[in-house]
Image 1 (tube, rainbow, N blue to C red):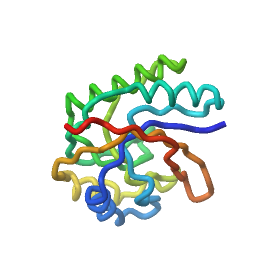
Image 2: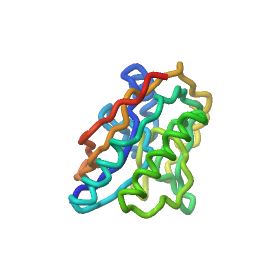
Image 3: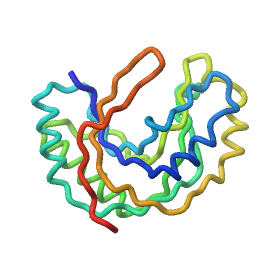
Image 4: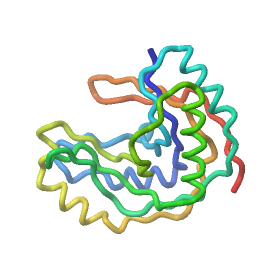
Length: 182
């Protein structure tokens, strides 16, 4: 049963700039280049027929490539424990429009509507339960709070398969659909 998500992939120069931010927090599992993406919709574990329906619906999505910039950093935390560090993506009408189209395609394919608000970001690091309390997290957030980037336009919507392993998740592109030049 494939575990799927729909994402945009930043270009190499942006990914390289994000990878330079890694380090300085004990216990953090920093993402590698292959793992850097901006999730538009988490699909989850689905049967093959549902995966095919999702792929067909995504193939009908037509939208311009959003013009994006990185904007700051943040964390996802639960009960005072950091679970992930991320780079923010500045709000964009074109990105919201694309994300809504992807969401509508997934619902047309039979998935339940996403209940969480869309927060555009690129995950940079994940933490185990104990490592999420490292005091260095606050310092890392302060040092990188002003993160920005040149504008970039992802060229494709990508359907990824995620495989969980002992050293974290590995992501493989399954299908990609071009976005119109902005």
